[in-house]
Length: 171
Image (cartoon, rainbow, N blue to C red; front, top):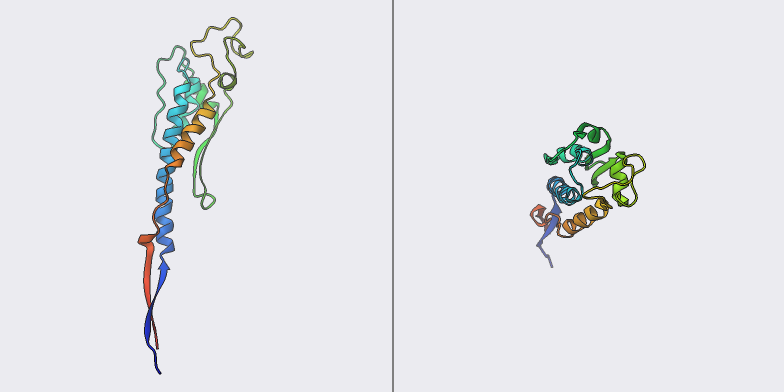
């Protein structure tokens, strides 16, 4: 007895899917950064411009600007110079999509954790300080919540368009 038949074996266009995944992840990272920055900047007042300017380099990587007005004492360049490690890392190493923000701006760091009207930054304000938004800003925690909320809705591209059936004949 002779049997003949056909079998369709699935084949995945791995390069095609990787390209689609990379594109989707780049777009997702940029949108996640918009969400993070938007929430973080809500917490940072624009007084001298320095604190908000620490986010400018990172925002620029996705074409976003950091509003910095009104400014009473222009220290934007100081804020930008005290922002280090602000960058996007896309697929380096493979499969990793991240952004990094760091600052050495003393009063932003102080106000992140302290109420400067009650506990003034020893490097900045002699008591009594009377800041309109004295902190603690807690922008890191609030930014994380915004990022996680966004990330919760992220879905990877479907693999289905990249699966092809290859006919294998038997007999």
